[in-house]
Length: 136
Image 1 (cartoon, rainbow, N blue to C red):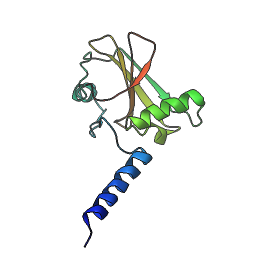
Image 2: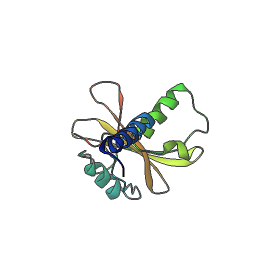
Image 3: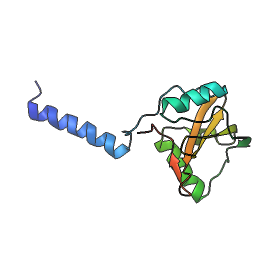
């Protein structure tokens, strides 16, 4: 039978492993990432606590680059930390929808094959890109 100290040691090791691997997240992005319709994209942003315009303020189609420079690597890191698999879509066509929130921030969603695969917030106050996460 496992002693109390042994049990605590195992739990501590598991928690430490998760922390070291960076798999614990402070705010979990909801798993439903339907981006097929405008309504589904707006509802997704609402589920994160972001009140946005009913229609996108801009739209464009582009291709996720196959190779990345230093700045794009930082952007991919931001996406990964937010739980988005953008790096899995190298060379794929994507649609980029930009919405405006009630604080005049621009919120960008990146959609591929009808799924939201990336996103960020561009602050209205400063020229800064922030991760798309649950508003708190």
